[in-house]
Length: 342
Image (cartoon, rainbow, N blue to C red; front, side, top):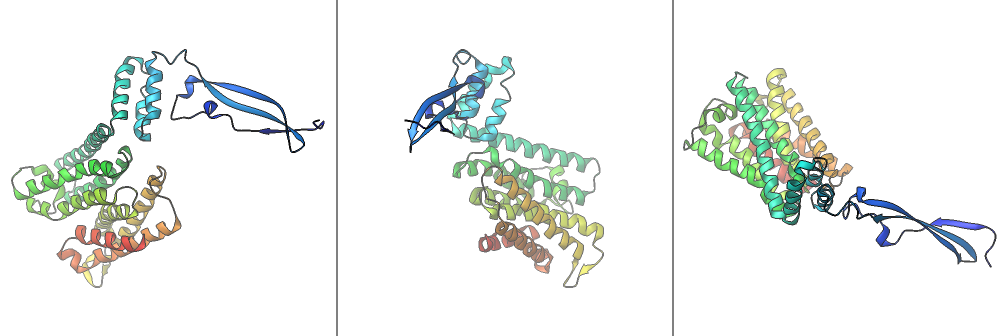
């Protein structure tokens, strides 16, 4: 006999009743409640109450909007999934979106190819922007550093739209890889592009593109193809090169009255700005990639970014960086030291 006092508890519903957000759209489900009879467990009564979902098939058959939502949830890339899902409300485009969703969802190579096209379009748009600012009289040195800061960081923002694994990394590296060829062609004189030369060189000499800009493209391509978005080394290398070195030049020219004793071409303000900008950008991208689950935020990683940024700023201030190229020395410092601290 059961005692007069009932102990009620909740139990997980059967697998068939559980809601899986990656298997069917929420709009296609309706709640189901199950109240099981009193059961005798350890000389007491337990009432089992379950909540689940059942699929309603009235809307799913032949409804393109529902199919698109399902394809969005089935897509392996959460960013692409959200982009697909935005088209659900537009019934005129439903069939086209459904076909595109199924094609890219079932073919990861096509998905990565589309992501490469999107990232290339974004980078091209920024390059065109800085070309126009150079044509319209923006200070050449400032314009060059704005290109330096923005391109690499904006490109890293596009990494989550690619798939995981080596294939996604190679597709992502395609865009900066093409830029390597572009720097070689323009720098050697085989391709005439005065706007690019003006926006990326210090003195308007095309041969300058064979040094700093070429090292810049090589760094981003290598960090992407070799380390990818799961490695703090890639974050440190690109952030110290783009944000750190770029901000150092801008701040140093404006506020760099007090020079470093061992290098009169560098200022204390510029070096401090480089360390701070590189560190903050690294922490920002650590949080950004952690939101997608690519890296795990930790105080150890944050401390590692600080060490790498300080070391990169110190190496950039040395006379050897002026003789070689700070794009090269900062990158090598970030990668080599990154392997030690991460």
